[in-house]
Amino acid sequence: MRKAANAILCAIFSLGSAAAATAGADLSSQISDIKTRIPSASSAVKEVYDPSSITPLAQTGKRIDSPNSTAIMLQGFHWFADSYWYHPPNGWWGVLAEKAPEIGKAGFNLIWFPPAANGSYYPNEWYNFNGQWGTQPNMIKAIGAMHANGVKVIADIVLNHRNGKSDWADFKNPDWPTYVIVQDDEWPGKSSEANNGKSPSYDEGQGDGGCRDLDHRNPIVQTDTMRYLQYLRTVIKFDGWRYDMVKGFWGGHIADYNRVSAPEYSVGEYYDTNRQTLVNWIDTTDQTNGKANASSAFDFTTRYNIVNAAESGHYEILNDGGRASGLIGWWPAKATTFVDNHDTAPRDVNFMSNSSTEYRVQRVIGYAYILTHPGIPCVFWAHYFDLGDTYKKQIQKLVDIRRQAGITNTSPLYIAAAQQNLYAAIVTGQKQQVAVKLGSSWDWNPPGQGWTLAASGDRYAVWTK
Image (tube, rainbow, N blue to C red; front, side, top):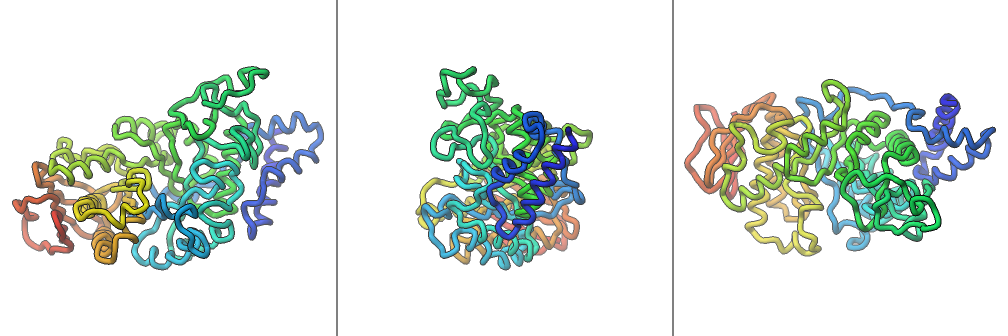
């Protein structure tokens, strides 16, 4: 029976590959069509929803979030780039395709795309790629343009929750019964059915009141998620995943989803500033020795520490006994650092254009930190493209310094000073050493001879040697 199930899956992907020019067709209808041609359909259908029947994709090479990675990521959107606010001719996907040569030339080798599924962060149809960011053909073009310019594309994957197509729980494409919804979800369910038509299991984590929270212990959810990720990898050609709201379900499911989809890179949005909590989550995402394929996590600890230090001048909060005080101080290979993203930036369409000089200074201080320190740094689109050419050049210079010095996600870090109005550190890249000073104090210069001032601005300076 398992061989039959694997044959079913192969047939599904053959159909998907044949339709690559119009990738994203209704896979649910393809599955239904295959099922109608299977003898003893009831037993075959049961086997189809067995996650152990999914053949894992081959892992090609080591993951990007492995030690000594020189990756630099760009978040390829912001809240106000979708069709509710912005109306470029080919949607946001068209903007990404147009910017691909510039993004590659700038030195970004990873880009994080917004959710591809219809409904975006409140997805309703997983295999419908026409939505508020543009049309499916333009999405395919954007991915191809990035690849042509040496940039790997990371898909934003929303697995914690789903919306119905026309009401709270009529799941379409793929079609699901209501008992994939956790028992304590806000949806009242169906009083005439067992467990009110929902799963008997309760939510494994944080809920989302705007969508139905899914039971990832259910084999339907597990199996269809695996198929979906494999489809995105093999047909749509995404290279990896940014998992949304992973606080909502157990990290061990991410281990299974990564195992079968073989992403080159994955990162979870575990929105928590407690770095021990972040480490605990990363640890659950790979059950094998060495944790080589564990997912990365966004380093919220570092983000809030550097922003607080820049705002207050209390740079001592960046030092933990000689190590960085964020996730990069404990598990730098799996830390994705950032200064702001769509979740932390103010939800105001006019904020960036009207942002104060002080806001802009503080964020550049943040970039001077993350672009010279361990971890995989992620630059926010709105900071790089929307604050003017002078601001963009400051960020670009820091990107250039990182690349020229060969700073990696695990480069050695020496903290020379961390006190009121002063933070100083030396990072050893694969090609050069980099010294960085943050804060209003002038009471520090890198020790010894041979240093060249490579970048400077209000309350930051960077030297190379």
